[in-house]
Image 1 (cartoon, rainbow, N blue to C red):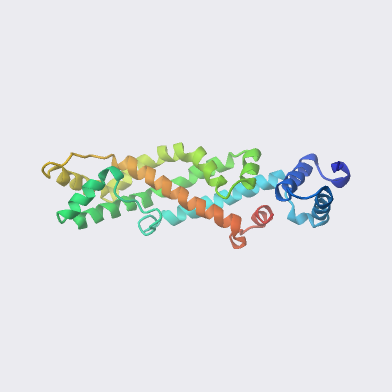
Image 2 (image 1 turned 90 degrees about the vertical axis):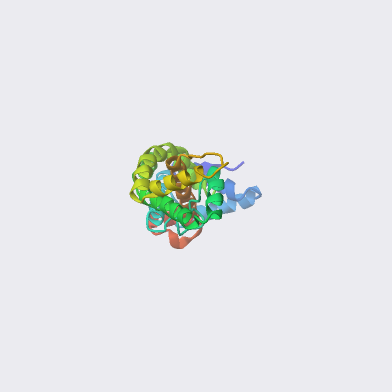
Length: 250
């Protein structure tokens, strides 16, 4: 039986636990002798590579603020949604028949204008997301942050989805409605649906455009946040501060 007090004599209890848990996670197949050597090697290295629970929490908060800020900046510019095939917002699924029918009767250019304007509305509204993300991140507990640091490559994104989706939807929807009006998406959409509904023998449609664009805009934003999270975890060049290098470099 290893005596951790002898191995970790000058460390606080929480720091000892962190070291032990970390080593258990990365060397599950080691014998006691091998495990002892790895503990000793860890303790004999410079302390600049280790981090405390608070540093881990501060590191993940810094990473999340950086990642969400970068993501918002990417999507809230011209073609942030429209020019990115991964998050470009198409016609609503329940209106695909509308799109197909209108294109078949020579109204493809009007359909394209509606799709462009829908994406412009999402780009216009996306900048409103930053304060919601920052509020959720700064309110994160140390336990939440530690779990994220040790979690899967998308654990921070999943945490933000759980804690901010309702707030984002509440904040986004009125902004999306205003943006749809501002970029004339509402006009294009209304004209298209009215034209479609006049075609004989079709089932009348009137999808809730604002609700659909709101959901799609939020989904696209989280796709970009997941990419930023993975970049920080995997790419040393994305760790632009000493704290990020310390926490995610270990």
